[in-house]
Length: 280
Image 1 (tube, rainbow, N blue to C red):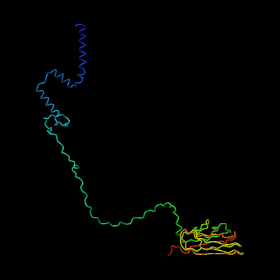
Image 2 (tube, helix red, strand yellow; image 1 turned 120 degrees about the horizontal axis):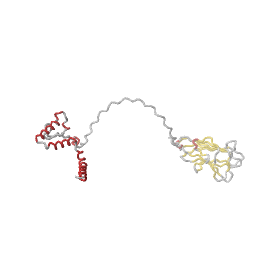
Image 3 (spheres, rainbow, N blue to C red; image 1 turned 90 degrees about the horizontal axis):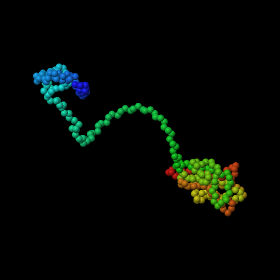
Image 4 (cartoon, rainbow, N blue to C red; image 1 turned 135 degrees about the vertical axis):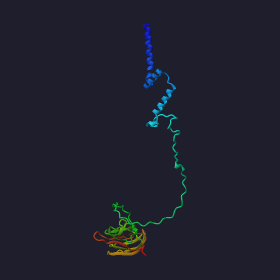
């Protein structure tokens, strides 16, 4: 065979080695030896096969102290249970619970227990904030009323009717007398006493009225005279709430005037409550 033929044979051997190399590497070493031995010895006899099964059975028998569950068993091996044990069934009691029944009748009330002992007194709490001031009371409910006022300036009539306004305050309880209007306002109904005192003017007429609302009640009058004198008038009136009492200067055919000066008070007007209407 020439050199060309030898190279061809070597190439074929290399190809076979490359092809069978991975296959032979997957076979375990023990099986490779067995395959090699079987190739050398030939196929085993039936007797040898039975002997090998017995050896294998003894090797994996549970009598040698190994865990039976760790090895493989055949259905005909001794000691293997024919039927697998089944756990007893568990009954869920909750599904057997019935529906809620109707509410029963209310029972009798039990006896009262004994009264417990009085507990200890608690601590004093913090002081609260000061409250707001309340609304002022109604002055109409007061059972007192009194005033006394005077005038230090003389007054001449310059109109047909003219109220007398006072500039000096002696007593003005609860401010029932208004110094700007010259009128007493009744806030406590009842019986009142009033008094008017004036000083006449020489050669002039004195003509005044004590008024209740717009009604002339009494007159204070003095004719023209060469002498000036003190004149007075007093009376009692039953007043209702919101009645007004005041003094009016009247202008007639002659000049009307009352006298006073800065040093002495010649003109006074006073009044006070005698008996309130609420008293029996």
